[in-house]
Length: 413
Image (tube, rainbow, N blue to C red; front, side, top):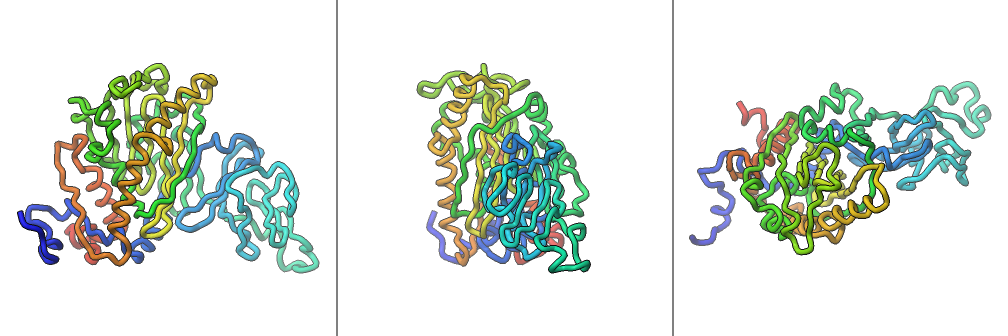
C-alpha cells in the first residue's frame, strides 16, 4: 500500500466508527486541558495518599489537585482531614514541605499547629484559626479568630485505607458511589488486613495524562514487555476480560502469572494478598487518573497529577501488609521492584512508550487520529477500556473525542 498525503492521512477510514478513534488535539490542545481541570479533575474523587503515610497524630502530606495546593493531616482524634494549603489572610501557602509532622514547634510557630510563616497566623488540626498575631491591635472587634479558618475539603478513607479527596463540595457521590463495582473485585483483598506503603517514587513525564491512562487500560502493548510475554502469554492470558463500569472505570480480570518462566523467576504464591489466589493479577483503572494494580504479592497504585497539556506527574506507590516480617517485606519489595521499581522490567518501558507519544503530540502539532478500534470480545487485547474512558470523557467535557470541535451530546443524538 502507498504512503499517505496530508488529506489521506487526516481522513478516517470509512470502516471506523466515531468511537473507534480519537483526535490527537484532545491530548495536545492547552485550551482543552484547562477545560479538563474544571470539568473533570475538580469534580472527581481522587486517591491522594495512603493512611500509612500519616501514621501518627499531627503527621501531614502536601499535594496538588488541578493546581490547587492541598494539605492532608491526621488530627489528635486520629481522623484524617484535607484542607486547601492556603492561609485565609493573604493567600500564602501554609506548608511548603512535602511531608512531616506538626507535633514539634517550628521556627515560625507553636507545636501542634499549622503556621503560616508570612504573618504567624496559626491553625489547629481541624482547620480552626487558633491565633492571629496582634489580633486586637490590628482588627479591634471587626475580625477575630472565630470568623476565619481553613477551607476544608471533602475527604474519605476507604478501599484499603487510601485517602480520597474531592474539590467539589457539591459532589453528590461518596467514594463508594464513585467507584461503584469497579473495586469490588479486590476490595476484600485490600480490606482484609492493614496495608503499608513500602515504596514510593514519582516521575514527571513529557506527555498528556490520558496517554498514561491509555497504557494502563490496554494490554496490546504487552508485546513491548519481554517479562509479560514470557510469564503471561498463555490461553488464560488471552481470555482475560476487560469489563467497563460506570463513571468511566475499567477492570482487567485476573489470570495466573507464570513467574517461574522468567530467568531466575519463581512463584510468588507464598506472599499473595489475603484471599487472592496464588500468582493472580487484577488491575482496576479509575477515571480520570488512578490505577490499582494488584499483582499477587504486591499492590501498585498510580496517582496522576496533570501539570499541563503535555506534562504529567505520576506517583507510584508499592504496598504490602503492615504485619510483614522483615524477611517477608524484603521479598515483597523485591517482587514489586523487579517489575515496577524505577529500574524494573516493565515500568520504564511504559514510560518510554508514553514519552514517545508525548513527543509526537506536542501542543500545536497537526491533528491526527489515534486508533482504538480493536475488538476481541472484550478480552485482554480488546481496546474497550479506552473506548469506555473516552465516552465518559466526552460526556463530562461535552466534546466528541474523535472531533473535539463538535459537542458530544449532539453527536450522541
